[in-house]
Image 1 (tube, rainbow, N blue to C red):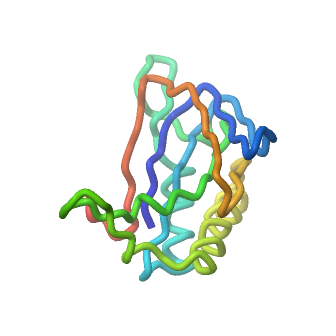
Image 2: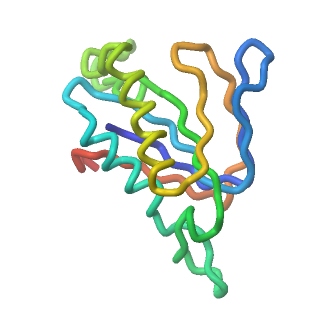
Length: 149
């Protein structure tokens, strides 16, 4: 699984003008699921997201986790994270998991993060979402459970 994790001051997700998720301080994770991913990868990604020490301590150093600052985790499905644009002008999505599998595993990330004590909000799977956020820092990290980067 892959995620683009952004430390945010606020974020919101809308679908056709309807607000489906809103959060203040926390971490917004755009999550992509690959064909070889499973429940173990979902649990690992949740563990890493909740435990990332990217929030400032009393001295301003990135030394505190989402749980330590009382932040919220936003989980938004993003199949294009498995797009391969190395050739030509049109990305290939053959490495992305089928929607039925991806939906289950994106939800598994949210469930696993909640089990670790994090408040979680989610987007709406298979919907055309409008995601807006205020990136704090900016701080943006790329995560991959197979540690490709």
